[in-house]
Length: 130
Length: 388
Image (tube, rainbow over all chains, first blue to last red; front, side):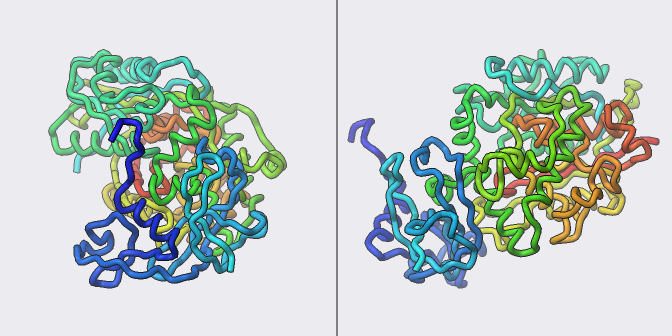
């Protein structure tokens, strides 16, 4: 590979690819604690017995903000709604899509949908109300 | 446990000086601290220096020796990086070194050069204190993360933007007499409510500014201060540190800061005081909501009630427990790596009666400094007491 080739973030990029195919998962340790990859050790209990488990299809928004002043990587995306969502034993932070940003509120049910950032074309964790 | 004396403090003005290097800023702060302390540079046995974004803003790693050199000190030097709690953690390590007898005199402080990055660049640099994979790549900024906490707080306990606005108004008011402050300008509640939104519900006036600046403290053992007849009436009598999961979404309650609670409890126990003994505090108000979370974590307000503290006058300069008499990060400014040690400097001056706002706390004996990193995955708390 040349120096200019992008290098993947092992664990994370595989997760994004799987999620884009509708096969999102989380990690569960032997004691039932959920976490996100890449992960060798459970952050809750130190268990190294970790397996991939299918992510629930929908989750509930726990809190949300509409960001008007982004980092340069999201310059053309603003304003956008960022939400923290409960997906069973794990939470994800993502951008709420397919709805007017001002209508996004706590308690809304959403499904994971990997989208693309307008500014960079990079994949972004998206959340679509169902 | 022996106390640690604050022999000298030094601060640059906080504000907008994009052309000034952090080595120049830190040098200025140390000159003041050494002059005030009466401690010769030769007696310094270690330099502990807090800095967060030096690689990004100045293309400079390995800053410890650079800063010792800037201060004119020949001693081993280490940089501490814990995001916005960088110099809080440096102060804590200095306290531990002095207490164990490893060192008698430590130079500790921090600096940050930020405004040369511009608003977008500084926003990007600050964001690296969050989880890059799971937060930043989803568009989380620091104002955004605190906005998520503010919304979670409103949903859990009630409150509204106007409550937060009173915190900004109070801290601007406190900064009016602080010549080192970035904003010496009074604002009204309506200014906060009508300001452009940054990350809703937070607007421009809910956020601390982007700042350049430095802080320095000369800390000594009790024995050194006595042997050298130092004028050092203020001591650090308690230190605590707490930690938490990196990403906000992994925090059980999105509107609480358990790391700060842990740090506060440890610092109180270490000093042999409790929250009821605290006469005033400097807390890490990077955003208005952060002051609320800090007050509750430190048990200065019950959970769910900190939101009304400024609006109801409990934390104003003439209130029961004045908070951020320096102006706080909000009005004094927040040169990230300098902030933790600068809070110790402000508390020291307030307790010693040398601060423009000392009259508001003339009988105070006990005060607290609370410094937080990230969405409070790192926190340090220090208790300071004055000989009366």
